[in-house]
Amino acid sequence: MEIPVDLLNGIEEESSKIPINKLISLVSDISNRYRNTDDKHISSYEEAIAYISYRMPATFAAIYAVLKDVKEICGDDINPKSILDVGAGPGTAMWAATSIWNGMDKITLLEKNKNMIKIGKKLSSNSNNSSIKNSIWIEADLENLPILPKHDMVIASYSIGEMNEISQHDALKKLWEAANNVLIIIEPGTKSAFSQIKKLRDILISCGGYIIAPCPHANECPINDNDWCHFSSRVQRTSIHRKVKNGQLSYEDGKFSYICVSKKPCKTIKSRIIRHPQIRKGHIILDLCTKDGIKKFTVKKSDGDIYKKARNSKWGSVFE
Ligand SMILES: C[S@@+](CC[C@H](N)C(=O)[O-])C[C@H]1O[C@@H](n2cnc3c(N)ncnc32)[C@H](O)[C@@H]1O
Image (cartoon, rainbow, N blue to C red; front, side):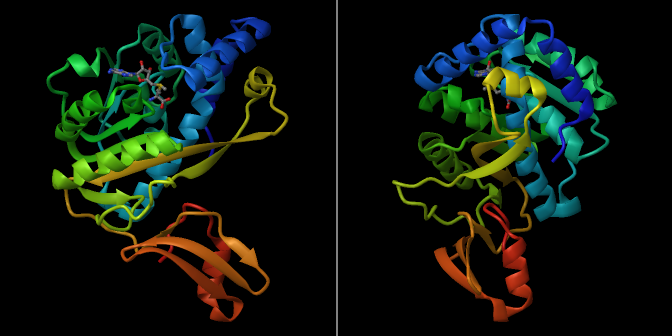
């Protein structure tokens, strides 16, 4: 996964406008607020710059991983020409979607925060992609809009979890109605965010949705209440990211939970690996979510091709 160079350049350029010590302190304030309080409001343009410097690469990586999975499962059956990015922030989902699908006719970004829109427009203006450059930004609160404009694919990444449960369910109906075909919701890979995703999944199934990913079925989710279904995506840290997070590692692993649902019957997967494969001497143990629930599956070296496939698989991979 590579973050588009024009996006990286835009992030570096905007971040360089704030003295590094100030940027570090803004990043620390925002992460503490996000971690310890319900206050997720980005209250200045400088905070929006801090947000993109430390958070946008990781959310890009998670959204990219989800969209790549959708493309690998559905192939040409899903080829969105229009995208609605809800709670768009700096437009992360737009950048990820245009890295997966070419020739987007229309991209609309709905966002309630002026500072996020300002930084999002600034980054878009640096883009080499005409769909991004021509994107339409709408400043509005999803909760106050009775309906949303229809688009082939609707994505809400790390946004719907900022609402309370009742608002989330209202919002979900609007997002579902706005999707000509696919709705994707991505949230942090935490126990509480997963429990929200699980509830939204049930509602979407009851609305007649067909699950594309991550689940191989639309049966009741077999993950028990003490556990949570989540995945991980790795992103190389930029130099600014290393500075603001005082990071020693050259990469960051971001955890996420998600659900992708289609309005039309779609290809389904046989099973998905839901933990790191355990590689042992002569065999590999996989934890699989399957149509028949969660199963431990042991693949022996003597199993030939299937062993090779297991060796090349990782946590989150589809396993056929
Ligand atoms: C954590 S940021 C995520 C931004 C972006 N989607 C991403 O993945 O990087 C959440 C964004 O959702 C926006 N948001 C939250 N509730 C919203 C609402 N009711 N209407 C519009 N935007 C909303 C916030 O203003 C914020 O910019």
